[in-house]
Length: 234
Ligand code: SF4
Image 1 (cartoon, protein in one colour):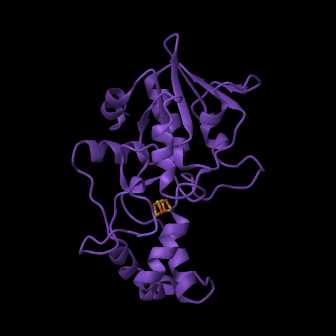
Image 2 (cartoon, protein in one colour):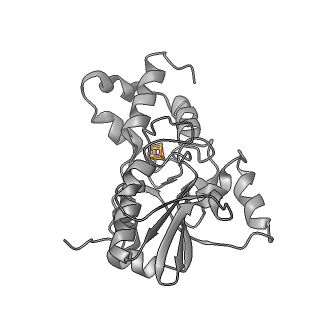
């Protein structure tokens, strides 16, 4: 079956690029994937099937399950060698489900985004109450839950409401910019993180395929509910 993300991936492909916390390098015609923090690490466990990405993406370094695949807690210590582009596509889709397809839609101007208030308004059952969240509470919840340093590495494209209000005034502008590599924020909280990283001329720039967030996820909706129910004081 053909993969609709193929043209986008192929056109974005360079000899080395970041996709979330994954470093992809083209070495002797093959694709070598590893954790971006493991580039110079010697003892990596080698895998050679795209399907190995399923297990590699499941747990963090401490063995805890990763409910949010785009959280900045991908495990270290592995190297995945793949011969063909189709295998690379499959592996990247296991690591970050749906993100290549969303990237393709965005690249071709076909991506539809959904404001948070719209997502909250269509909730039913126990999540219906989440729509009562105030704008101040949204600022705090989104600013904390979606932040790149410790929350999620996706670039937010959705707005808070139909008026186009920014999702959270507590996030740096770079969080909404697909041209910014979100991993530059890791370990350096605050809006100056990206500027500092960009200003660091000793670190060569590396191409990035952004992990895009086109609509608020279920985990964020659950956080909004918690706040409204008073189980979280943010
Ligand atoms: S709403 Fe998007 S950016 Fe926020 S945590 Fe969920 S997936 Fe990540």
